[in-house]
Amino acid sequence: MSIAIYAGSFDPITKGHVDIVIRANQVFETIVVLVMQHSQKMGWLPLEQRVTLVKETFASNPMIEVATSTGLLAQYAKKRGIKTLIRGLRAVSDFDYEAQMALANRDLYPGLDTVFFMTSKDYAYLSSSIVREMVQHQAPVAHLVPAPVQGMIGS
Image 1 (tube, rainbow, N blue to C red):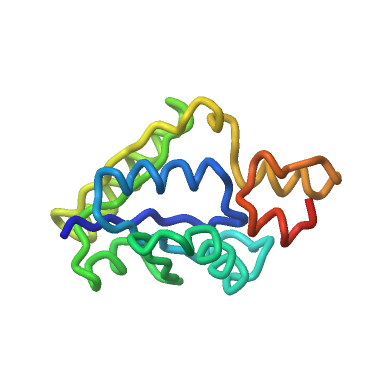
Image 2 (cartoon, rainbow, N blue to C red):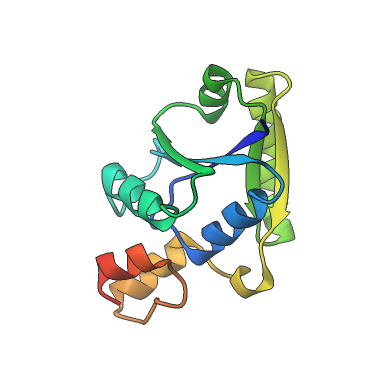
């Protein structure tokens, strides 16, 4: 069985994230959406709420597993015996950072590969940070987030 991890803070999950997961699930049998707690970031939503929103978003797809971790991604992958990470790229500028992370992860877990998916053009500008900023200023975000997030923020 082919399995890959798509990790992020998902604070909140966006339609851009969903697009990457759905397309990755066409390549890999199972996708583990790993909701991470970033040690350098103060979360907008508590970890438990982010996990719930991600689970609700993918509830109809049994081939998408939702998990959580507060440690290093490579350590989680090694513990699970998973050899592939999924990352989304919005622009060329994302690649420099993601390439560094891929190499660091491989250093921690030799044989761990990272597969990059280009974000669909409709979501090339989209990030959780943009959604949070829009919500803060009462701008509409329903077109940017899945239904569970819409329900949570009341858009």
